[in-house]
Length: 161
Image 1 (tube, rainbow, N blue to C red):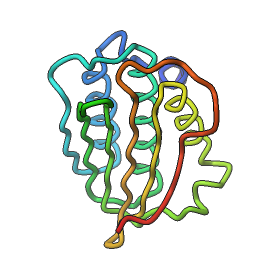
Image 2 (cartoon, rainbow, N blue to C red):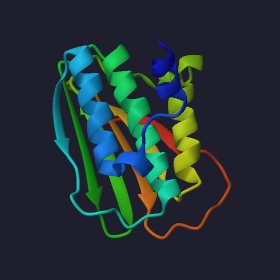
Image 3 (cartoon, helix red, strand yellow):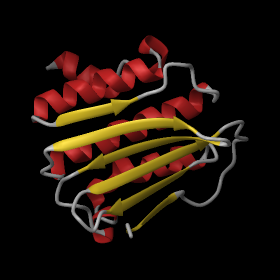
Image 4 (cartoon, one colour):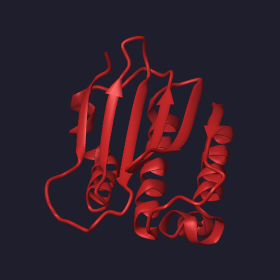
């Protein structure tokens, strides 16, 4: 129990395993424990962003994975990380019950709110959509070559078209 508590406080992350290794490990372990089928698509090459941005993406991924495992009643979860022209984009999608905008305002959505703040400090954004056919899509981004900034939260929600 102590090891699990320490893991939650200081999880082995990007410094120990690299971003892709840490994300793969956490996603695989969580999916196995929750009975989820998992599809992963992660880059082989190092991502061209500072460590703070990788940590923000990793912690956002953990919050998203935990929400799928704990609340979505999903059978499948897919996770991808793509390098686009000016940003790195993390996408987590599931086939569960979906999320409502009101769910994001609840006190237990603190992990996603904190993630949106971390991402915003890296020139990024967090967007969460309920799919019309069921399930949820979380998309998080960080800017390549960001400059630290302060400002409003980078989280939004909407309904996928």
